[in-house]
Image (cartoon, rainbow, N blue to C red; front, side, top):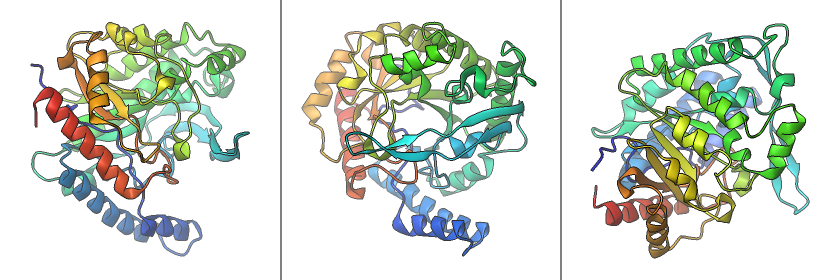
Length: 372
């Protein structure tokens, strides 16, 4: 039996619905009614509560719920030197639902690590953990600096050619951040990546072609890109990657099974674990798991965070059995398919449903793998 410490047999992606008082404080800060220090004290209170919530449910992997962020990606990326971004914009879809139009993220100078980004946040999280809990930090994948804008989104003055300087500079900046987190005691980091999942969608692949990229080559390039970051990973740190097809207010942006990216993702990428969305038909079948090498873990996101309806435990077990036909059961784990709130807006799901969903994950994992 391979050790899972972390990721755990029952794990989760990391974000949670913000309490109303935290949303109100964030709005008051935006209006200038309270200071950044006052907002942080409110965030501290909310984080202490969500840590207790996770531990009370029985999770061993604990996050701060991303309660200090507005968006899962922009808040981090804009703090890297050389990166400029606007704000995401909510747009109305033809079906009447709201979708998040991604912000314009541009590389306008040499990318560099100016200062610690997540360290102080992790230190507070770590101070709240009970013995036996492991703090996890989720940060956006480095591919977010390339995919949305492609070559046109990266300064030709500072990067006349992307290879190797752009990828090397981003990897070095991320490496510095990983080292600062490790120095604070962090040993579990997750990259949140929409781009590899988007490259499974025919419409998104066509858009990449329109930007001058080859959607068949891009997954392999991104695997090499992430490997450059992984080369800086401090000893003892577990590095995971989470693939998401969109999660803004219970909507999605892409569909398609993992086959177009599976070999690059699973066989070529030097990370320790993969959090894979598998909550509905948009994610395809489990055949891509055949590329999972020995010693790595695929965490199956079989439980939806988009809707409150509780999945059947028997259905989850059946699907785990299906996945185990393509990858060894001892290399599999279980989680919700995404966080409950990739942005401050949160998903269309009740607060109480978070507990029910996580308990279902824990109970199912315990019955399948027989582990606490």
